[in-house]
View 1 (cartoon, rainbow, N blue to C red):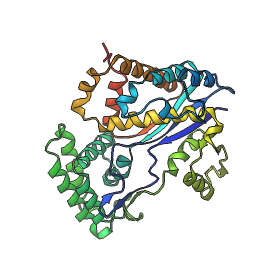
View 2 (cartoon, one colour):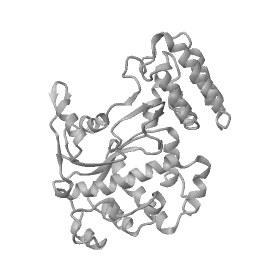
View 3 (cartoon, rainbow, N blue to C red):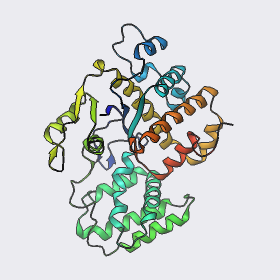
View 4 (tube, rainbow, N blue to C red):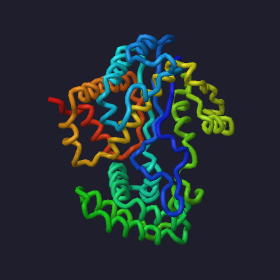
Amino acid sequence: MNTFYYDESNNHRKFYLKDKSFNIQNSDLNFVLAGVLKVTENSDFNYDEFKQEINLQNNAKEIKFKHIAKGDFLKCLDSNKLTLFFEYLYKSNLYVHYSNINIFYWGTVDIIDSLVYNGFDYSLVPHLKNKLYKIILKDKASFAQLLHTYEYPNIKKEEINSFIDKVLTFMQQHKSKENNQAFCFELEKLLYGAFGKKELVFIQDEEQHILIDSFFPFYVRSLEVFKNDKHVFDHEPTIEESFEKNKVYITKQQINNYEFIDSTQSELIQVSDITAGFLGKYFSFLNSLADEKVYEVLKGLTPLQKNNLVLLKKIVEKSEQKNPYYLHSTVPMDYFVKNSLFLGLEDDIYD
């Protein structure tokens, strides 16, 4: 039996519309539930030796990400202690796992899912979601007001045409700087074709103004996908309460393959804290990085930063080769392009 260890980054607990704005102002901060897993009974990550190597203070009860690196992503990437961590992790018998959720993307692209119809070219759907997401980011405040007015995600049947008209108008007002006009055209066509629809299945009959009521489903996913394994979480009171109130079943059998423990009592939860902390910085950085700035940033990396990205690539590939389902992302398509460039998954960008 494998054992998954978890920690989290950027846990906002809820995502909702508040006073005609989003309760979370920074749309770059992905929710990340991540950590390490062991596929053997014992881990060979030499925790005590690692503590000595990073000169952890004697009064520190546990290792946290802040002991490894501080500051924004690029500053964290320029850390010698991060290099040590990556080297220990890569050489160990541990693998990394993560769920990486862009909550702004998750909370708004149900609009697209509600518009597609039988016979629609579903290969276009990820591109249209990506396009809508990028257009929304051009004026989040105005789009939040639009959603708030129609009590999203609880669009009334009699207001469907009006809602579609406002989304279409918003898009036409903000698409001018979009590079790929082909997908803008397909998105417009999809919106025009939705006039007269009698339902928007994913954005009706829901609690108004609540885009994500709880992050609990993101925790449940791993338990369901890896139902024969053990899952160990750091204490998180709201999630523990959710597990108490909402028992999880698969084929009528209750899942009890998880536990919550104090991080000070688990070396691998602490290793997971570092993993989740860094990945939270990394994924959020990719969100914030404008497409036209990617190569500029890559060319400006220091040798230490480049080396740490190479190590990260090795760790990710090691885990992906073991099981691609260890790595899960619900994000816009642009993320995958930038991720591939930063990890050199397509070209040797560091020559």
